Image (cartoon, rainbow, N blue to C red; front, side, top):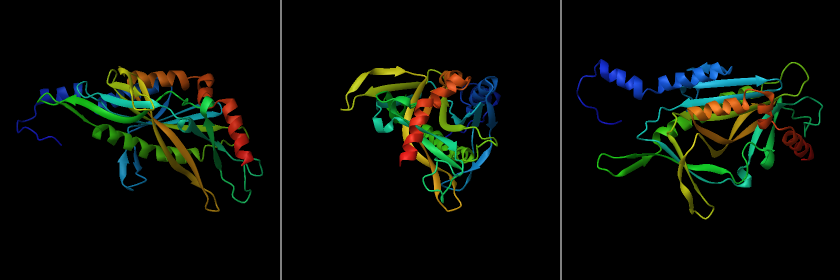
Length: 294
């Protein structure tokens, strides 16, 4: 924490903080946009950190269901200042990074099961490459930094503030993955669930720069409204009565501006056609075949 002046904080100081620096006011703007878009939201609740086992507060958890498709979002908001924007360094996405996983309910005595003695309530499917939400060759974030200029004129950069929000987001989504294990409806229709972690920052505060696979910078830094960063992190969904753990892999975390978050909602969460970009029929069929053939 920076060393503080001894001057008394007055009304005008509080107004300046609320107008320019408050994460909470920005968080409320994101929440309003989501609810106006007919997205169900939880705001400011608590969860147990899966690593530290300490109680932590999340910003927003959102859920959208359209017919057989359900998407959950863990959203953390950071009111990044204009003098300390985010720069994400990207490389072309490798084929091993081109996937996202979804969950589906398993039914007893069906071909979904490899071992009928080790049945799970839900299974996972890997949507790969051309069917994936994350395409081969697209820029994918590998390093993040907030960049500013120190009082002495030198460039200063670190990722402490962003990394804190990033970590909170990945911890918060642990609960949402567990909920996916219990998403099966009472009827016999197929249903599918997905979860995505998001960090949202104000407009015009997110930049990206791309490198080729040999480390050569391609072009200049450009402003963007969305950048997907590879994480490749697995989460436990649930445990069968025989003790086998069902796990879901989250391939990416989304770093977006307010407009980027709004655009994601409009493109993917407002219609069945949009949902089918996350749950592509051909990708799901291929994933089921791979599962049966194992």
